[in-house]
Length: 64
Image (cartoon, rainbow, N blue to C red; front, side):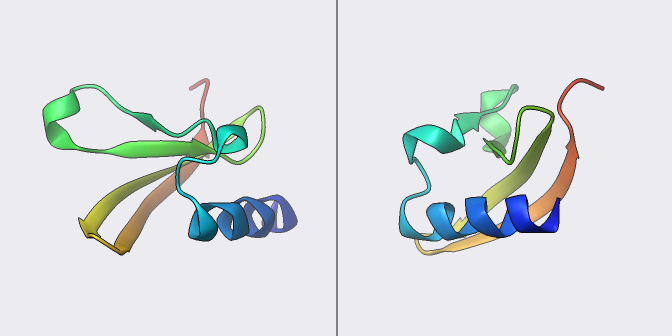
């Protein structure tokens, strides 16, 4: 899992909206909480703090 996360973070740091990350704005949209895919099962949940600053809030099982 750590290797997968590191790989996806590398992509994310270069382009948070890279197509393989499947970045999406979560509901309710007004909360401005986003996620990106680590693998088929896990996603990282994050927020944009400033233009170039993000905070990863959680990594969780997408299907629970």
